[in-house]
Image (cartoon, rainbow, N blue to C red; front, side):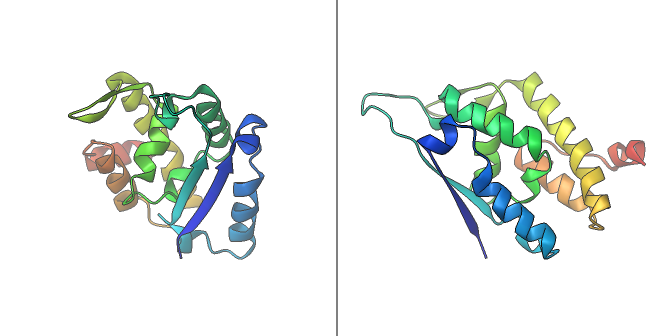
Amino acid sequence: MTETITLNSDTIHSLDLSPIQTLIEKLFQKREIADYEQQLNFEIEYPREPTDPRELSEIPEVRLWFVRLDAKYQWLPFLLDWKSGELGRYTAMLVPHEFNRKEGIQYNPEALEIFVMKKIFILTEWLEEQGLPSRSRIKSMAQVLGYDLDDSVFSLLE
């Protein structure tokens, strides 16, 4: 049931969130949000010169679209397909980083920590509002981003 949202340069340049808004509105109307856990991918069709070495997450216009998306749907990591790397790519759109040819993406450690903690706070509350158990989901998300959470974090949030 994987869902792919296609973004093109017009969508990105106009900061148009309608491709994903339509899906999200449908999920909430049908109360199917839990069925789409880790089922969302983005296909980004953004033209670049053949000599342009930048990754999509290094293109300011693409990043800005994702900043707008994250501002509107701060709980979106719940829907992203973590196994296909979509959570890592989404994080790269929002967290300063560098690419290392041997080790891959290298996030700014302090920025990543702030991002992860913010998502923990947002998702814990949002999942509870949806009536979904949150602890194991949040721990799994944090692990994908390189963090092991202790249960004491959740005690602080209760």
